[in-house]
Amino acid sequence: MKPVMDIHEILKFLPHRYPFLLIDRVIEITPGESLVALKNVTMNEAFFTGHFPSRPVMPGVLILEAMAQAGGVLAYKSSNTSPDDGTLYYFAGIDNARFRRVVEPGDQLRLEVKVIRAKREVWKLEGFAYVDGELACSADFMSARKQGG
Image (cartoon, rainbow, N blue to C red; front, side):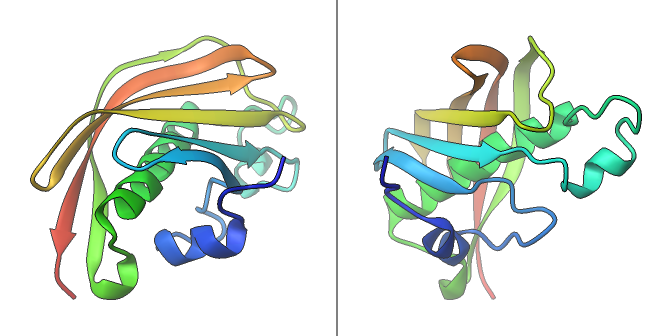
């Protein structure tokens, strides 16, 4: 499947860089509504050296961060803004986070985010992370826009 946004375009819309850029491609986007992104989880991820050396597991907070980054791309694309124009979207809150399965090296996370509400500078979204069609994590989260330079 050809990506809607490859890594080069994602880098234009997220200020994150290695080792904290946690989405690899966007495969679907409906501005103002939803986005689907992929994260390929490899053994080369820096966090696996310490979490856990004998049984590598992707930390839950990083799964949530990957969802938030997907939500950030959706917000940027929906508002026709980018970090280059001084706009930043910050992770502003999280509710109802649930973890249902571990994510390990070799897995591919399918990150689905949907807008619940977007008002002024605050976006409320719901996110889901799947591995092979199985729900790994779900959460509601907020993103706040900060304009400036």
